[in-house]
Every structure is written in structure tokens, then in C-alpha cells.
Length: 228
Image (cartoon, rainbow, N blue to C red; front, side):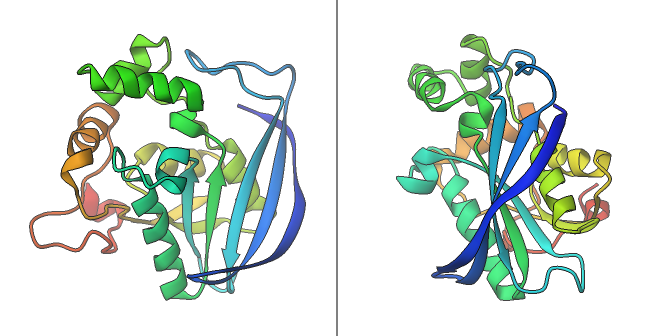
């Protein structure tokens, strides 16, 4: 979805339990009237994005995580998904490297919104998987877009990154925006029974990559070439 403009709104110091970051706010103004992605909720005219930036991100391609908002996981610690575990793993990896960026998008429920996500939970309790629930509610399996994160990275002066993700669509989106992903880093976390079927559905129906094998580390570095 094209943006007429993307600008930085604010920047401040942001101490966390992982270390000292800078927190930046970005806003993107959509080009033309707000329009819906196919089978997705109507887009807002203005979309927001938060970036947590640590250390020197310009001397070498930095670690980057594009993380979609998940109130249930990130805030309440839900174990229906692996979102909070992925968020904390990414922040730990960035802290270990001493530099990197976490981009936090306001795209709850893979872009369908919080209330629709809760309705999807209800359907999942009745036996649907996460994709089936979204489709039954009239949405696409994944309504997210990554144009705003790409634009924010460009505003930060970056053209190459090392991306923490299991989702090939994020790699493709950055590459199509002119940002080279020189390395894909696994975002796999320690599996739990409560979200095993969720991960299986993402792998089988949405093409998410599973890097781990018995005995391997879920946070090991894996390039695209190694994954293919």
C-alpha cells in the first residue's frame, strides 16, 4: 500500500531491561483515500510505527526485527501464540549484538484488528485453525503490509539489514522496497504444546520457515541459502 509521505514524529531515550534504546515514532500518510487490502479491514489514513534503536546501526548491516502488535501475547503473556517469546528473543539478540532495530507495527491479529482477532479465537476454540478462522470471518489469512517498516528503515539511512524472521513475505517486502536482506536469522523460540498447532498451521498454510531440528538452537543464525 503506497504512502504519500512517511515522517519521524518523535525520538527519546528508552531504557529497558535489555539495555538502552532510543524510541522513535513514525507516521505514514496513505496516498489517496484509505483503502482496504483485499479481504482485510479498512486501512487507516495514517498508520503508526514504533522503532527501538540500539547502538551503531550504520557501521555494519544491523539486526532488524519487524514485529506485529499482539496485545494478547506481548502484554498479557498469552500462550496461544509465540509472539511475546519472539519479541523478547529479538530484543535479547539485539542487546547481545549491542546494535539493532525492533520495528513494532500496529497490525493486531495479522492486520484484522483486536476485536476480529478475539472472534477468531472463539472460532479456534470450536476447532478451526488460525487461517480457517480468519477466512470464515471474511478476511485474508494475513492482512499485514510491510511498506511502512521499509520506509522507516530508509529514513534511518539503511539499505542492508540482517532480518530476524521466519516469514518469507517480510524478506520479499524489504527486498522489493530496495532494502537488501543479507541474512535471515531464525525467529524460532522454544516450542510449547499450547501453540504447537498454531506454528504447524503457519508453516503448512502460510509458508513460514522452520529451521530447527532436534537438538538445534532456536536462535541460531541461518541464512536464506542455508534454509533453501
